[in-house]
Image (cartoon, rainbow, N blue to C red):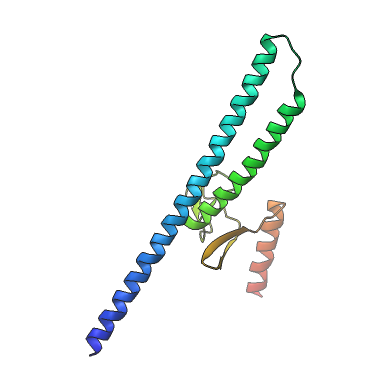
Length: 157
């Protein structure tokens, strides 16, 4: 009977793994769809701004700067949304961005595989099945080095 119990356990683990991968893929596709929608919206706003500016220019009319400012503000807000979506996508992929070269680095790596730069610690919290990536920011890289050196000295003592 033990063989069949083990077989059932392995089948359940395999099914759970497939289920998790499917959910992850589905979440990634939803985020990519949102990202595409936001980028399309920015393109439309840019086209609207360009048409308005050109139309007024050819008619030697003043620009409606308030309307243009509002569209620019909307673009800025959408760019913030895009940044958040990109952070969510990175968290799903278990990667972070190197602060030195901009390359993608596995979230648990201490050094960038592209440039070799020491990486800032990133923690990944799992809440309700969704991953959140929280970057611990350091204002001054020298402060980080001093902090690390003091840790090494404490370990030596």
